[in-house]
Amino acid sequence: MQKIVAVIYDFDKTLATQDMQNFSFIKNLGMTNDEFWSLTGEFSKKHHCEKILSYLYVMMDECRKRNIKLTEQYLNSLGKDVEYYEGVLSWFDRINEYGRKKGIQVEHYIISSGNREILKGTKIADKCTKIFACNYVYDDEGNAIWPKMIINYTSKTQCLFRISKGTLDILDDDTVNKKIETKRVEFHNMIYIGDGITDIPCMTLIKERHGLSIAVYKSGNSETAAPLVDDKRVDASVTADYRENSKLDKLVKAKIDLVALSNH
Image (tube, rainbow, N blue to C red):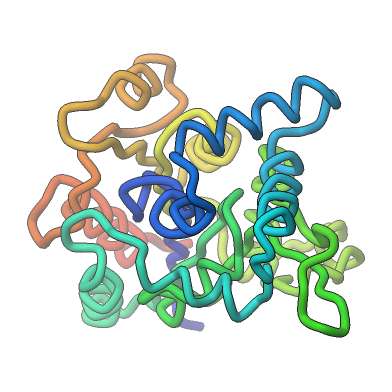
């Protein structure tokens, strides 16, 4: 059976240079990024509401006030405006090819608290085996009416177990909760790449199970990521540079090499 390495990413500030809503969605509302996220924070405090649910509500509410139809198609269209760190657009094919040469099947997954519909419209969506992210229920006219899925700290870790067991259908609760001796992807064959605080549970879990956890940061801004190494929550902290021969590139390839040589 061919060995599989799962490379798992957060998205905002991990692959993309900032929150996905910041590129077009907020601008189309006629708001600044600070105004939108401050409004989300105020809603959370006023209603004692989880921040993920708050931003999903504010997206709906602000679109309603401006007569902007918050449809799946509209959100998909915003994905084209997302900007990435250097090397991201060629990263997936390069890492897949490197794995192939080593006899490893590389799969890519996104686990994000961002919006799945926007993610599905990005240039990298088709490079991923599965995208776990927040999304909406739509009415008969196609308008968003309710969040049907949110991805927060806790559910991010559940997604790791789904990847491990090969249970990618979010409705399949039975399989994901069963004890399975042989996993489709063992945790020690996982690589998690995140940008910091919201990814700590996933990064810690994978590190403890002998996978590879990497905290990335925008060049010159390591204040959040670097301490995670000292706290032994991640294996490494590097600049979010996905170009060939970057530190990140070398770390991921070295892990693929280890998996190829292992007896697991």
